[in-house]
Image (cartoon, rainbow, N blue to C red; front, side, top):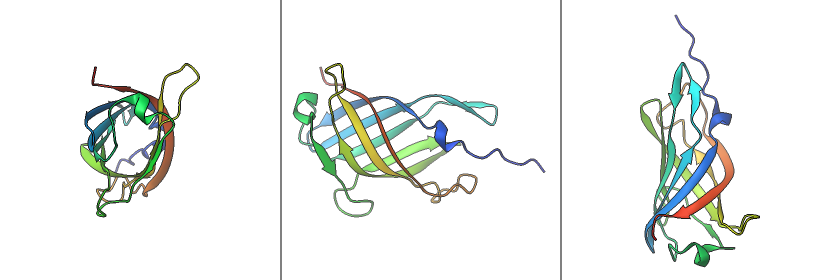
Length: 139
């Protein structure tokens, strides 16, 4: 019997985020860096939907931080990441929007990958915090 290679949780690294939607119902798609796992390239993104933010204008979000409850409490962010043929829930509890050193904006995301819900090679739910650059799909 073949032993499944453990999921490389440290390989989940963001490369860029894109903000879209409309105020009060915003989505953020966070593209992750592709990586190799079990002889396949994993090219995925962390999808966050139904986010109650006041604006799509990045200048309006600069320097601000927002806290969110987890599912199923009202106001939670509907989050997931697609890995190994399954959408795994992601509970995001905080978003902040600091400026980067070049005058742009980053998004800092705090939450938990809920791997136990669908089962991913016995990987436990895993808390995370990361930051990445962000742009708006609205021109």
